Length: 389
Image (cartoon, rainbow, N blue to C red; front, side, top):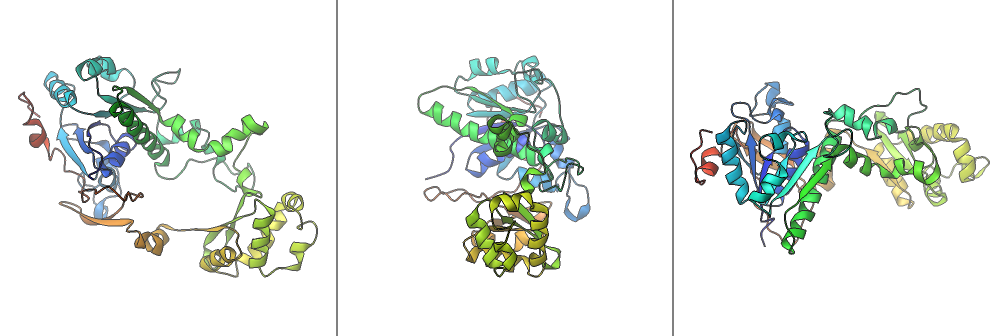
């Protein structure tokens, strides 16, 4: 059985929309990426770059987000470009777009117009705040969205106190959240359509997607009337500890059973059976001192020794891996989580593979991200029009 049998037109730049398209392309969809003539996707100008030399064909950000896609240069600001796009959409299954609400309507490419053209078309719109609401027309960077979602106030986790200011998550993590939400919703829309439904407009708010993924903390306000903050994860849920060599790990303290496993891994110190550390309440009320005592032990063992010692006792811990540690991890290598893809400009590079392993689907080999306009003639020559793109 082959992968996802769908033709997808991607009219999106940078991270959120292209990540949505990438996930679907990884499952086998034919994703045709529409790029601005002469410039292309904005991600082409965002590093890191191969050998630190800026090159729109060798941006690590672009290369990762656009594997398995085809690139078509098309100027939809022109009537000819819009005509070509409409012809592509006439037989497409999905349009992924990230224009601000109302922009495509002004070009005659709004959902109502496209639905009349192709009733089976699914339009997935990924925008900072969605298609409705008082913020719908607001533009935003990743920093704005991180704090608007409530996640920023919870970071950095394990802050000692609120004197440590909030911060945003690393990289473009929140934009990836929006792209993942878009891909999931698009698959659901495809399943519904293919089961006898019709096309539809999928409205994805990146802010909403980010907030939903942090619901375990934010929901405490509704459940308990407690306003969570970045110090909340530094109590008896999980605690950051330092290991020998300056590495870090997280130990879990959320139950008596978890504590007893950690206590045995530490060598069953006498103080662990004495007040105030012999009860959950006592450990919570004296968390600062508890953390000092745990760190006094954790600094005597390596990250790997700590992890295995606690696991052997039936409790939970997790190493805080560096990027180098992730790439060297035997578990990832055994699962084939990294694949080498050769690119005509950037050369052979290792990429993160699709994390899922469907047993009854044969996916095509990974293809490198396309050069700007690499497939323009290949795609447009099949249309019943003449395009200058």
